[in-house]
Image 1 (spheres, chains in turn cyan, purple):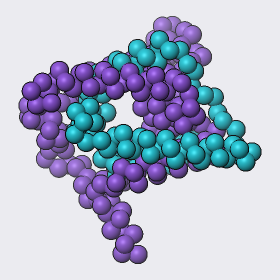
Image 2 (cartoon, helix red, strand yellow):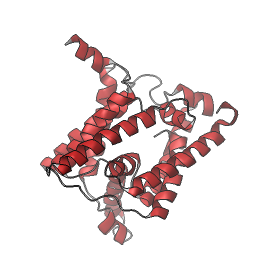
Image 3 (spheres, chains in turn brown, blue):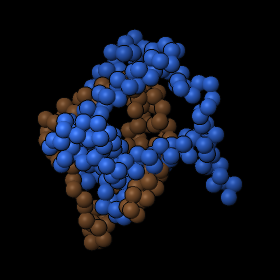
Image 4 (tube, chains in turn red, cyan):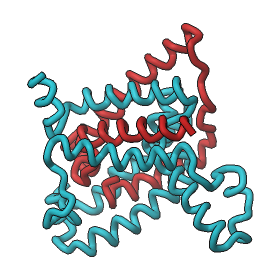
Length: 93
Length: 181
């Protein structure tokens, strides 16, 4: 039960950060594909770097274990990504 | 104190600041709950729930029994939280459009490209979302569940996915925008 409340709170923080980065708008998402507004990449890469450093640091200190890492099926991941991009450019999600 | 309220009242933060916040949230999620951030899986959990209520036979298969079990999962709660968090974000900067005249179709760039009709926006959003969800099902996650959550664990899948997403996204946008690209 308490895990679900954590999910709710973390989701809210996630949504809050997306909103403050402006990624809840169609134009922000599409403009990264037009190279006129790089906010999506700046946001994503900052999140990646911060979380990478934190997670690998905490693991090195023995404070946490990694959860299941998303599986690699190169064909599935690539085709999924290719279709996903079409949807993303159409809707701006 | 005033500085803090002004900071939260800003409509847009620097993407670096917002991204750092998301990075911390991702760490906290793994640390506290041993789960990853994600959004697209929740729709499949909900679809499975509806499907098993309406057509239990068709939904009694490998995918819904083992890969995407139906029910109120971590992801579903996170999705609800995402919605609430977005509302809070907009409310703090007084840009919440709920109940305002153009709330259903607010993006100026969209109107310039596709026309001002609201039904068009909703139809394309619906069809595009089907494409998105289908693709996320194939790839094993979406921008948050695979690209960010996988990327931070250095999963190869995430980087293959990001490459595909940008390749076809750039191409699709090029086709839609043509001369205005």
